[in-house]
Each structure stands twice: as structure tokens, then as C-alpha cells.
Length: 476
View 1 (spheres, rainbow, N blue to C red):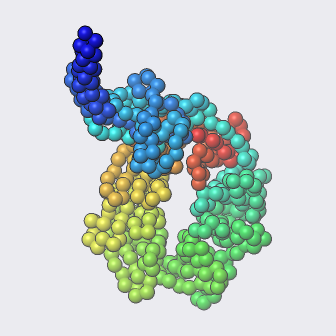
View 2 (view 1 turned 45 degrees about the horizontal axis):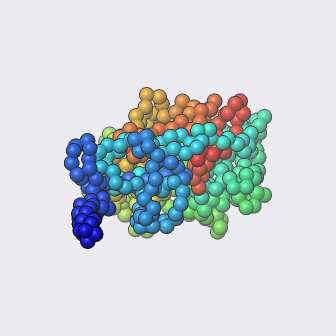
View 3 (view 1 turned 180 degrees about the horizontal axis):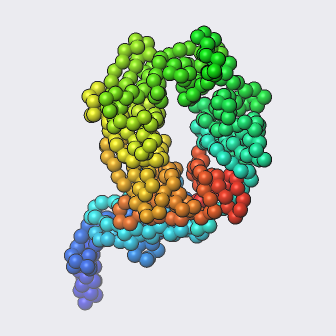
């Protein structure tokens, strides 16, 4: 009798094992019962990363926990890191195919949310979702009436012209230690032109038309470009020679026009050299080639001259205008902007077939490349667009009824920062479902804004609560 009981129990356990083992294997393999469709199906997963990290993830309103046993492989493959712990990055598994509402929440931050599709045996990735503070931290760095400003090439300093009782000052602020250095003061200062490529010199212009080079690490040393005026062929007495169209070629060389004559000025050797004659045109030098515009027969032509051989090559034809300016886009591409109608052309001069070398035509009053020089962001008054250079593909990010000032990439190019109607916003580039858009700050007046060399910080030149100046705004 006892033997029969043991045998019976044994058979029951075998039966339970035979029934449950396949179910456990199916479950471990990612199979689930889909109650919505009344069938067994393979599942999918979410891979979610945020900046900043350690945010809570909610799926259809339910707080989620990540799959711990898959962490190391997941982090290494998706997010290139083995860091463990925290809330995000997260790998969330075993979701039957369907549409889900994903919400990402962090204390004191605005909520990110989006409806996303899960497909069987696939991972839906949310990579580097930007979270922004509900109340950004605002710090006034300098209270001045700033009339012109430029950020340094390394994004670590800002140079600006300030006005005080008709006296003008050129100052530079170090964004890390917040120290300000007055480099030059004069009642005749007119404009801040540009930084040298290495960020060690600044080019400014005076009301007299004279250009000055200000040496950042020797505030007592300035250099007037008047010193480089050629002495041969003196002008008539009623005409004073003045430089125009002055711009940097490299750290020690400046280019400038005298009339129609283009010169190269060597700041170290203190010499000027005639390069070429250009008639009523802007110019650009790339790889020992000079580019300029010429108008003929109701058409504008972009022409190339090799500065060694002086051989001329017609690059492409453009709609007629006397208002074209060059933009030094990348190491290869040339940008031409018609300042009269804000129409931008991207041109590849290496393509020697006319009209096939224009890779983009677009209305653009502002533009910027990302750090990889692969994505171009540009905007007109009411649209923000991105152009992918590799794929030759244009994508409209957003349209607005209110005028847009300027749009720039933020951090890893997953978000775009832009201003409109004295407010600054962030909009994500991910266009699945609806785009998340966050209002960061609303102020009295925006003159300009910059992103620092590291994330989280935005610098604003404008007016907040009746105080004009340069502000540091922590947005993450």
C-alpha cells in the first residue's frame, strides 16, 4: 500500500514536470500569452538610456524594473558602457507586440513621454533621451550692455563688446572660472569680427574702418592692419586705402581686400602678399584654391582659381544676386548664402558636373553643423530642418506659427535648442510618435545664446528681470 502511494506521488510529480518544464522553457525563451489577441507569441524589449541617468521608467503607467541578468551584455552592446546600478539605462524585457506609452520621470525634471511599438524578437531603443529641469538655475555672470559677442572655437570663452556711456570695451570671460579680462577700450570700437582658429587672437573693427588684431595672452599688444597697407601704387589724395572683407585664413594669417585686390597678411613675418584680383565679390580659400562669385548675363557663377597655377574653373551657376556670401562649411563642401533672401546653397566643388554639385538648396537664416560635420541644422523664420550629408536627406524637425530666432544642436545631437518669442525651447530629433518639446526658460529679451563645451549649461546674452548681461543657465 505504501509502495502504491509513493508510485502515485512519483507519477504526479513526473506529470507536473512534463507539463511545467515546457512552460518554463517557453517563458524563459521569451514566449508570452497575448490576452489581447488570444495567442502565444514571442516578446520584444525596450532599451532606454537618458541624460541625466537614474530616471524612473513607466510603461502604460506601471513602474518598471530592468532585467538584471542581462545588464552587462546590454550596456556594452547598446550604450558602450559596463556601468551598473541606477534606474536608467534600463533593459526592459518580455513585452508582447503592441503599442505602449513610455514615460520617463526624474524628480525636478520635466517628464518625457512617447507611444512606441514593440515587435516580437526586437528591441525598441530610446537612446540618450534628454531630460530638462523644470526650473533651470540662473546665474548672472556679468551685468553689462553687450552689443556684440562671439564664442571661442573651443567653446570655453566668450568675447563681447560692451557699451558704457559711449565708451566701448572688448572683454573675454573664461566660462570655467568666470573671470573677465578687459582686452581693449575705445570710444571708436565698432564691431567684433571673429576669433582666430586657435582661439588666441581676436579681430575687431573700429569706426574709422581700421581693423585691429587683439592678442588674448598679451592684452597690451594690438596690431593695426594699417601697418600692412602696400606702399606701391599710392591712391589719389582724395581716396584713403582701407581694408575690407577681412577674415582669418589660419592662426597667423589674415586675408583682406584693398579695392579689388586680395592680399594675404602674415602676422608673424609682418608681410602682405598680393594673391588675386576679385571684382565686387566675397571670397573663400580652401586647399590652395580661391573661390569667388562673378556676375555675367543675368547669372551668378561660382568660380575656382588655383593659387599656384592661376587656372580658372567654373564650378556652378547660381541665381543672379550681388549679395552672396561664403560659409566655410566642412573641409570639402562650400556654402553660399544669398543675404538678400536668406537662400542657402551647399556645393561640392570636387564634383565637376555643373548643377550636379549643388547638394542642397534651402531657405536658411541660421545654420550650424554638428560635431561630426555630418548633420547640418538650419532654420528660417518658421521651420527647423536637418540635412544629412552622407544620406543626402532633408528632414523637417518642426514648424511653428511663432517666429524662430536660431536653432542649434544640443550635446549628442539628440535634441535641438531654439528660441522663439523670448523663450528658449528644447525639441528632440526623434520623430517617432509625437516629439517631446520642453520650454526651458522665458525671459524679457534674447540677443543670443550658446551651448558650452560640456552638457547641462546654456549661456544667454539678453535681459532677465530688467538686468542686461551674460547669464549662465543650468538646464539639466
